Length: 399
Image 1 (cartoon, rainbow, N blue to C red):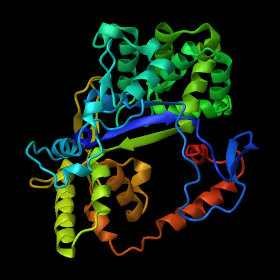
Image 2 (cartoon, rainbow, N blue to C red; image 1 turned 135 degrees about the vertical axis):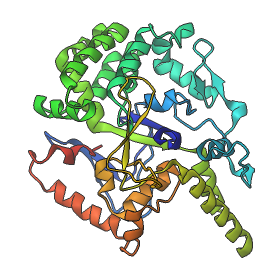
Image 3 (cartoon, rainbow, N blue to C red; image 1 turned 60 degrees about the horizontal axis):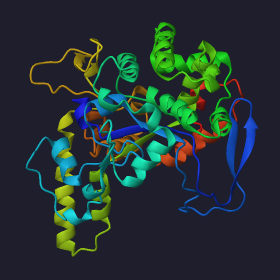
C-alpha cells in the first residue's frame, strides 16, 4: 500500500562545499539563527547556488523495503524501467526510449565489508573517507544484535511512515567527527545549526516521536551511546545534548526524493518529436501514472496505515464506515499537506510519487486557479513578520 508507492526518500542536514553567487550569510535572530540574503539582483529562474549536504541518510523504513539508493549521495540505483515495473506491479512493463535512463549500473560499487551499495567508486571512497569506516558493520550487517541495528530497529519502532527524519543522520554526524582529523572544525559546523531553547527543543522532539517521546528519547539515547559514544562529543550523549541533536534534525533537515523514472520522464519532456509521436509518448506516460496510481491514494482517505506490532507488518485501519463496493484509500500526504490547495497537493504527489490524483476532493477543486505559489509566498512573508515567540511550527521549514 503506502510503502509500495514510495520511491527513495532520504534526509539531509546542513550544506557545505560549492561557491555561492550573489548571497551572503547574516545573523537573523536568536530564534532563527543565520539566514541567506541576496547581495545583488537575482533574476527569476536563476540558480542561486548548488551545494551538497554535510550528511545525508536514507529513511530507514524506505531502506527496509529495499528501495535501492546510493548509500552516500542517495542517487537511485534501479533503472527507470525497473522503477516503473516496481511501482506499477507489472514485471513486464517496458519503457520507450530506454537510452534516456541515466542510471549506470556498470559504475555501481559495494562496500567490500558490509556490501552496502554506491552509485560509483567516487561515492564509495567519499563515504569511507567521511564516516563509513566507523559505521560499517562488516559481516554483522544483518545481525539484529549489532548495536547499530538495535538503534535502527528502535527508531523504526517509534517513527513510522510517513517518515520525516532518520536516527542515522545523527549517527553519520557522530561518525564524521570520530573520523575527522580536525574534529573541532566539524563540531563547529554542526553546532551552528543548534539555536533552540530547551522548551522549543522538547516540542520538536514531541513532533518527531509523539506523546510518549520522553521515554522513547531516553531509550534511543542509551542505544545511541552504546553504539557511537565519542569523548570529543560527550555533550551530545547527555540528555540535553541528545535532545539538541533531535532539534537540529527537526529544524534544519531537508527531505530528498530521488527517482530514475522521474528523471526519465523529464528527459522525455525535452525530446524534440513530431506532433503525433509527442501525443503518443504523452499518452503512454499518462497511462503509466494511472497504473502507478493503483496504490490507492486519496486526499480524503477513508483508511490509514500504522505499524502497531513494532515490526514491518503494516496495518490498514478504517477512518470511517466503508460500504461494500467502496474503494479503500489511504493518503500519502500528511495532515498539513492535505489541507493545501489542489495545485500544491498535485505538485507534491507528482514529484514524489509519480502520479496525478483524481480523488473526489481534487475533482471538486479542478476549477480553482493555480495561484498557490503566490499565496504561499504571501504567507511566508507574513510569517517572517511574526514575533519570535510565534507558533513553533512556522519555523520548522527554516533551512
